[in-house]
Amino acid sequence: MNTRAVNTEHHRIVIVGGGSAGISVAARLFNALKHPDVAIIEPSEDHYYQPLWTLVGGGVFRKERSRRAEKAFIPQGATWIKERVTELCPNENKVITDGNRTIEYDYLILAAGIQIDWGRIKGLEGHLRQGGLCTNYAYDQCEGTWDTIRNFTGGDAIFTQPSSAIKCGGAPQKIMYLADDHFRKTHVRDKSTITFISGTPSIFSVKEYAQVLNQVIQRKGIDTLYKHDLVEIRPESHEAVFRSLETGNEVVKHYDMMHVTPFMSAPDFIKRSPFAQTA
Image 1 (cartoon, helix red, strand yellow):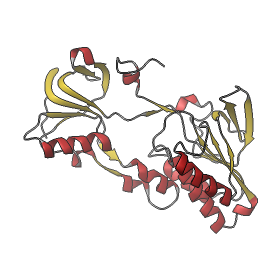
Image 2 (cartoon, one colour; image 1 turned 180 degrees about the vertical axis):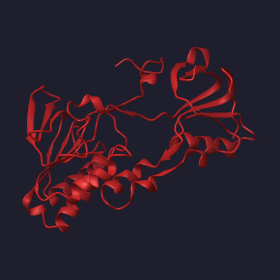
Image 3 (tube, one colour; image 1 turned 30 degrees about the vertical axis):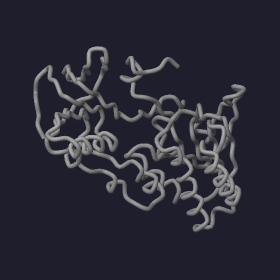
Image 4 (cartoon, one colour; image 1 turned 90 degrees about the vertical axis):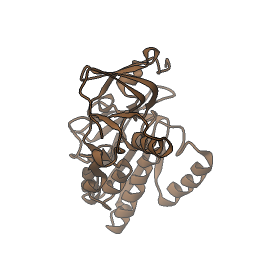
């Protein structure tokens, strides 16, 4: 790896994001090209294999299995810029980082993933890992999901999915099925309800898969409510407020445990850029 500490620099190819997508593309470039000039802009010292977090939440793995050193995945010969991109300037073929560095490029690859908008659900922040609230969508939270599931003694269990795009469209269901299996093994399923509440119009966006998954939830006795987004949590009363995407009316549900899949969106620097579509 090369490091260059200058305020302005140029690279033939710039990759924004050093997650699984970014490093995979970088590896392919180094396999296909001879001595490519590639820079990867990624601030984190750690790489997280996020698909494993569902299994951490289900008690199968410890969260540490999902974390590796980012430097182990940066291709030899690539320039690793350990900063965050704050601005995209495609008309000038450059990006600007939080270190006030300007990175010019001939080709740009955006692999920044999507961000989690924790603040879009009132009452969520500051209340996870307590009172039956949990989520798999963060490294420091996924083990709390397993604590919640294994300490559940019966009652109302809710699993949510927002109407926004999310990381892994099946993850909100996977943890629900793992929880259902554990509840049966610990003999609390017969004194519990499981409800899947989603802002999407069906159990899954692909019709062929949805047909099979509908059979699964029917077989497992799981209730469903679609086109409703979780908009507020009232931790003191163990109530969750869901808003209908069709009517705007709100429905209040009681929970004893609830796995929350938060809203997600493009990183702010992409939203502000010319790359973003008007929505």
